[in-house]
Image 1: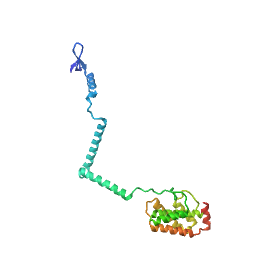
Image 2: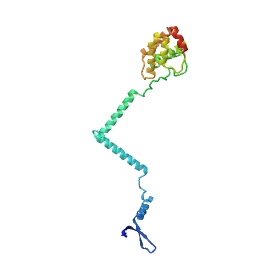
Image 3: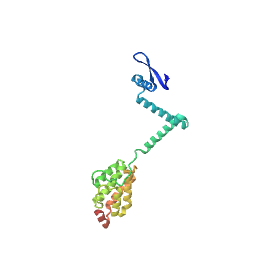
Image 4: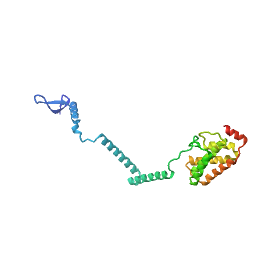
Length: 229
């Protein structure tokens, strides 16, 4: 390389026909070198794109742990202890609470299967009660109450009716049992949607209400209203 007339030139091993070296300016020389170095033979051992990406990722993970361990008492060991404790707490909460229960909505229907008579619901309730399945026993007995009121035309058969709606409507036809009907509907909602567990006393209260309602005659003015709604 030398300077000729203010221009920097580079001498390359290129000769003309008379074997006389030729001077090539700097820019073309650099471009020629770049073309030469871009040949595949010079890059056979270069890491692939995936390898470079993994290297960047592990560098990021290393920097993250280094920063976290530097801010945590006990360094890396302290960080690992914290992670283990957090995972243990999450597992304990999941085991204790279980899968989240569905919350009740105003659109939850009292009857979730095909139509059955009040007596059929009572038989199912008794079968569950004898096996100690109090949740199912409470559900079936509440369904028996509502179906019985429909069969007596104190309630109009209406798909999609909720337990709360049925209790409120039945309370107008049987005002002396308004509080018991609301309590029965609340027990039904608790075991069906609230994730709670019923017991034998809860079932026996609804069973006694069912028997009592069968013996109760509705008021004349409210009976006609309930049948025509």
